[in-house]
Amino acid sequence: MAVTEKDLQELFEKMPSKVQKNRRKHILIKNGEIENPEIEANTRTIPGIITNRGCAYAGCKGVVLGPIKDMVHITHGPIGCAYYTWGTRRNKAKREDNIKNFINYSFSTDMQESDIVFGGEKKLTAMIDEVVEILQPKAITISATCPVGLIGDDINAVAREAQKRHGIQVLAFSCEGYKGVSQSAGHHIANNSFVEHVIGKGEQEEAPAKFSINLLGEYNIGGDGWEVERILKDIGYHVVSVMTGDGSWEQMRNAHVAELNLVQCHRSINYIAEKIETKYGTPWLKVNFVGIESTIKSLRDMALYFDDAELTARTEAVIAREVARVQPIIDQYAKLCQNKTAFCFVGGSRGHHFQGLFRELGIETILAGYEFAHRDDYEGRDIIPSIKPDADSKNIPDLHVEADPKRFRLKMSPEKLAELKQRIPLSDYPGMNVDMKEGHIIVDDLNHFETEEFIKLLKPDIFSSGIKDKYVVQKMGIPAKQLHSYDYSGPYAGFNGAVNFARDVSMGFASPTWNFITPPWKNSPALSGEMNEG
Ligand code: CFM
Ligand code: HCA
Image (tube, rainbow, N blue to C red; front, side):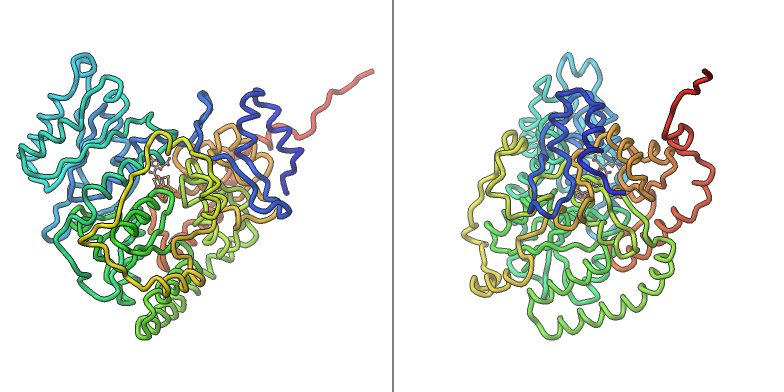
């Protein structure tokens, strides 16, 4: 069933008029007659609305910094903030020779009321000294939480002093939770600091091997990054650094030597790709390793970029071998998925990326959206010049970078690069809106009220989003698949990931559990009337 403007009208009528006015701008019904309609995104959620969004601290410490394994990440704040950004995201990391791995530890100053009253700088200083004494990390991060900004602890001064005292890099991040309208502000804060203080600071001058790449915006959730690396290494690529899944400070410092940057999640990391290009001359390529077709396309785009006969042949051989291996298994699972419908609502890029994988199984995404993406993630990169300054850029000034006179190196002639840009999505990406089908819904910052209303209207066969709404949705009788943490499963990226996803989703459909749940709309009749005994 398609949703009409009239349905939307009825849904909005249940909201207070101010909320209606605000929310109307965040919801679109895809209508081919209007090319790329404008959607409001990356603006403040109305207080009182139950949003799935997180905060700037979550985006900085939890998302971007957290997965870097050889740095100790200190949360200066209440214990809950540290715990939330440590255990639940499932960014996996392996032990490696000569690289320490602190990923299993959560470090927090565990701020108490007395620290709020008297200040917490001394406690933070003591904690850094203790960390250095016990663990001897090569670098430390300090992330601010809301109270730090409110009481005025100067974490930058503490970091500077600690850096002098211990002779190791100590980076402070002023990512107080309220700094932006969502996690997205935190991504900016983390990335700006890396561009300024970490990337390009290593000793290496040349790429250590042919076909050297960095993998940006891959956080190794459920092992996604490992599956992507497996494929890339098999083809003959050398992965210099991954930002930041199973990543390391050590490798990031030499990221400037790579010949190409791959960008998986553009929402959280496009700034780094842009800045590295300006500073070191490394072009970037938008890739998507979620879904078989997207994985194949990404691999072929990479081969086009490097333009090497042997690499291209190897790319095709690996694709052929992998597809022959996984497709028959996926086909079996896909039988259980035909003509089903999904809602796909995730934070930044996954709300878009997973639509292709759903489609390959025979599942159509009828409603999708992002928690905190910006307009370019919906409407495509082309609209960037027309975007009015958004909430993040007002709060977090853009970092100005210039070409590094010692290390800037053109990786390819400007003519060849320009010619390639005609054929592959170098420094470009289409928005989610292009992939949505006629009549399907796009919702920015979907809230819990709207979730329930849209479920009643569209009755999807599967709902994919996060932990905050999963259980409400399951109680409505709809299988829910977390696309943040993958519900203890994964990887879902690459060829093996597509098999895992097909297995998990079809299991959701095949499970008899749903027969024991009566959705609320089945308990109350759709039509109601009164008996007239006259
Ligand atoms: Fe990028 Fe991510 Fe996402 Fe994201 Fe996130 Fe995440 Fe996400 Mo949760 S970096 S934007 S801030 S792909 S943590 S690994 S799943 S909301 S869609
Ligand atoms: C975050 C992390 C998160 C939360 C997931 C969820 C993640 O935003 O702070 O709400 O289910 O992927 O772990 O996005």
